[in-house]
Image 1 (cartoon, rainbow, N blue to C red):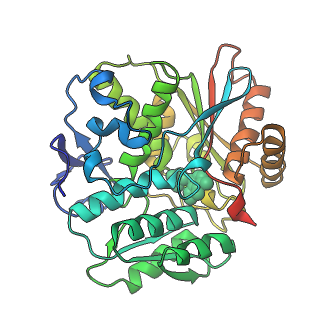
Image 2: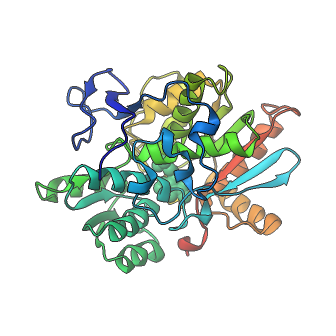
Image 3: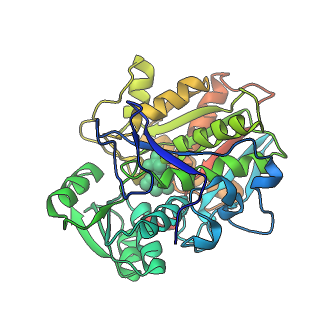
Length: 374
Ligand SMILES: Cc1ncc(COP(=O)(O)O)c(C=O)c1O
């Protein structure tokens, strides 16, 4: 198995240092910040990139660093959008094989890690990423070790065990789980943590390509996304930059909105204060577990994406998030997770504040199933 010929280099999102894309790599060797996967896509037209016969994210194979025929896949992505109000759609990521958008990133990252000769794969997780890594590791036939906060709901833990992964439960947040793995790692283990590994973003970027197809060759005016580590947001932003470089779209972009909850909102705080980097959030608390990321290494990339697209960042109170999760599920029949409920709560606030206009076509992301949180 090899990487796609269009793969050029890995470039640090922060300092611009370039590294060999054909070696198993985590972060920038100069500044330890996240690396971007750079591809030489030229001016391929949509018809040259999109293979409509493939009913998964691998339909964009020509724009991906792994060829579809080499993918470790459980048929992820190409999820539906459902109109829930006039000009408002939910993109429903709960339909993915492991019940969240994390399937996309792990399909890509596990494919790349296997192609580059990785042994055992390890990652800290708030829950959904661990389940996805466990499933794709099983599909690839490689060992997986995950660490999660001890208060992670039972279904996430059982899911990982179901796929044969070794599970560690750690007191604290995902940051503590990451520290635990760093201290207990075998030298040949490969760390596949959010944005400490370059290829997960390449899977997530397919959400940006899907929106282009689902809006008939255009993009919506606003995309509202729940932000923890930031891969979903960063992935779509990267996809749209690639589309512009290929000549599919001009400089216009959907206004990206980052949603967090009031109990853990480092991106919102930095956005509001004008800071370039996020600061660690003390005593992070929220039952939208995917948003309980107090120190996202890629926070500065999220901030850049929000500012470049004239977007914004919203912290919703915990109680509001809970109430709106139930309200949207009951009103639509869509399996809304707490992170998706936070997005709906943020949408209602932005509407009230007239940040949204009558002409805006708005996409809300329901990033996973609500059923694992019980
Ligand atoms: C359901 C759900 N939504 C959103 C997120 C946040 O995703 P990201 O870390 O890519 O920002 C997560 C992460 O665990 C999640 O599980």
